[in-house]
Image (cartoon, rainbow, N blue to C red; front, side, top):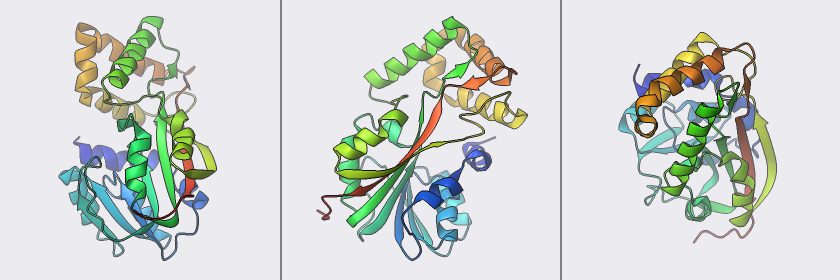
Length: 254
C-alpha cells in the first residue's frame, strides 16, 4: 500500500467533524490548509461552505487531492518551510499533523500568520507522544524515548508538540479560544486495535527509516513489541491528539 492509499485509509479514523464544529464561522470564508495531503480535510471544510487553498510538498498526495474535483478548493505545491504560493489574504489557517516537524514552531507561525486577514484564526492539530502506549516493555519504551530525544536534538521532529500548541500560539500573538483533546481510533484509543489499525501502524513503522536505523538490529523486536501492545486487551494510549484554535490579536498582514 503506497502513501496515498495509507492517507486515504487513515481519514476514517480522524475526528475532523469535531474540529470543524469548533471553528469560527467558515461559510464563504477562505481557509489555507497547510499540509493538505490527499484533501480529505479540505473536502470537509468545503462541505461546510468554505473555500480552501491546500498546500503540500508531495505531488502524489496533491494529485489525489486534485482528483476529488472539489469546486471550491485549489491545491498548490510548496514546501511549508519556504515562501507559500498564496498572495491573497485568508480568513483562517488549518494545519493538521504538520506542526511537529517545525521544532521552532513560533517562527513558522509568525511566517504563516502573514497570510491571515486581521483577526484571522489558526487551528492546529497534532499528536503528543506518538509512541505513548501501554503495556510496553521498559526496554522498548526507552528506545522510543531516546529516539524522540534524538529527533528533537536534530530538529527533525518534536514528539511532544501536541502539549505545546497552546503556549506556542499564545507566544505568537494568538488568543486561544478552544483546546480539544480528540478521540482517534488509530492514534489515541483504549482497548485492542482493529486489524486495519494494526496494519496501518505496521506500514507506518516500516516507512520510518530513521527509526529503523536508530534501532539497528533491534528494530524487528521493537516493532513486534509495539504492535503486540496495540493488539492487547489491556492496551491504553498515553498518546493524545490535541487541537488548539486561536485568533490573531496583533492583526495586520505584513
